[in-house]
Length: 406
Ligand SMILES: *[C@@H]1O[C@H](CO)[C@@H](O)[C@H](O)[C@H]1NC(C)=O
Ligand SMILES: *[C@@H]1O[C@H](CO)[C@@H](O)[C@H](O)[C@H]1NC(C)=O
Image (cartoon, rainbow, N blue to C red; front, side):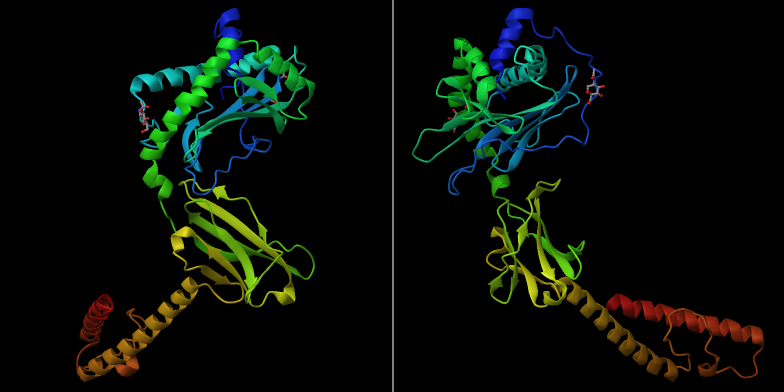
């Protein structure tokens, strides 16, 4: 995100912040905007290493007057901050998102970032003709730092232009990525002229970022280590072709992100298993879709197997042709209820016949069971009806009581 600080500072020096502001009511990209990190150097710390802290920026420019910026910050796979695109405000997503920085230091950094967020699009638009940028274009940046046990913290700024590596900050210089071409070279040349700015960037990367990261790691420890078990279920996907089946295994709601899911038959892992992308759920847990394309006749015996740290070695297994445990349990519960109803029913029948009342196989008072009800002899029809309904009410009450006790 700090990539174009030099441009920003230049902007402040040349014509002051806020000049050349385009209509504030300009349109924003909606859902068409695709949040992709393709082209950015992936950052995978070794498993024992603490997670890194990264700021991500994705800026899309449609034409001279229309741009959209997405921004977020991440502690490993946990999102810590979000840029609200409508207001340009940086939102803190956790109580510990401020690390252990003082209010004062946070305020200074936020001011700097806010200035960058505001000025970056303006500067890019202003420079677009000088560098012959062709609309539409997309710019991505990833900046942050990581701790390595026994070594100095590592910091980085990587950028991508149109989805390909573009330039990065190395040591104390802006450096074009290999194969990025003349555009990256000339932009780096310009950026490298601003010595003071490079020193500011250097200090933010090598001092501020690692200090902030250690505060985050302390504050976010329990949220980082939170273990949430996945739910898994299988469905049939849209058929890949005649005589073929697409088996889909859904795994959702787990945390942390690493998960292992595969379609198997006996002890055989199915090589045709296709893993989707692990996608975030709104509650901070993860979702994964794993498919297998099989001939319709060969689906028997296939099952989806899920390993996750929260399961403590007890893998989830869901059979394609069988039924998941939950379904079996539901069926079992229904069967038990039915049996209970029949048993209780006959018990009540026994008791009721002792008391000369009608059997209660139906809890509802209709239809009247004339055949089983002994008509009180000699009473009028009216009295008879009243008596019958009294008996039924009594039965219903008894029935409810028994059900409540179950
Ligand atoms: C710029 O792009 C936006 C979004 O595609 C479009 O709505 C707008 O009309 C364009 N403006 C100009 C001047 O081309
Ligand atoms: C925050 O925590 C880190 C690591 O414990 C420490 O080095 C630093 O001095 C603390 N405070 C600030 C304001 O950075």
